[in-house]
Length: 392
Image (cartoon, rainbow, N blue to C red):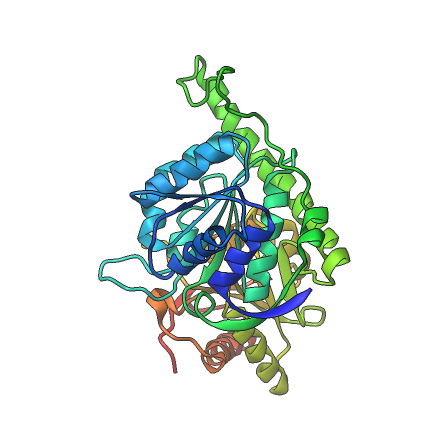
């Protein structure tokens, strides 16, 4: 392996190159653009044996990648924010067609007003579509999970597309040392591409037509759901296999920090999980036993893994960098629903922070948690289940 200083965007590009992607469909949008620019450079320099398709819109970018993948090759694209919203129709078509495909999402606030900073609304807006969706914390994880996502999506137990998310600028344009695995190692890890069917000239098949029986349509949606549940095993297996090759494992669907003796749990996803760990350390110095759960995979949702840690918790505080307007943060809604369905009666609070890109420090996280824990310790509950936090 070679250690190389890479931005999060370049880590994603190197991952696509190492996965031997054959078709890249590209349309620029800040802050994603340098991913496909780097891939174009690889192709132009002869470092990557692939076709670059320059399209007229993000909708066309995913449509082109979808077509290429349907034709039997590894395909890749990337986007952000309004570009992902423009793709939204195709997001559903790709999942419904059961075509393995990998797309990187550099998370960015949705307008109006125009805003290029990170929140998670764009990525979380796709969670009902049938894609596997994960969120990376750092640039090494961006590279590793993009490579691993090809193997996960192409597993016959899954055969669904996957998204890898990373925070705009916090990761996308920040340079960190990244271990680059050798091409031979990645080749040994990734088998030849597998998919449920291939579109090819002279051998027509019908896909996406009006069904003769709506029961078939519903069964297709049920099968996507079952395949996402099956993907939980695949994600764990692939994480272990990657560990044996590289020495790096992430815990599969979630990653825990100081959870073993924790009374109170912070839950979050993305780059600010590092700040959450620092906040937990500071709070433990005050005698408050706090653990941090990083949700790595939003879909499939890590229900069983969360229940393992949260069943006997005194409180759970879920930080969201996006909100389902009129309800609550998207991650909170999933956590609270699954705890309640399992009969776990633990106080759960939603802290909405960093929405639209507001900066959040470990001091801010510690402050919000300290106040919330004090309330639970005094009354046994939270006075409100949702809090908009703007800082100290």
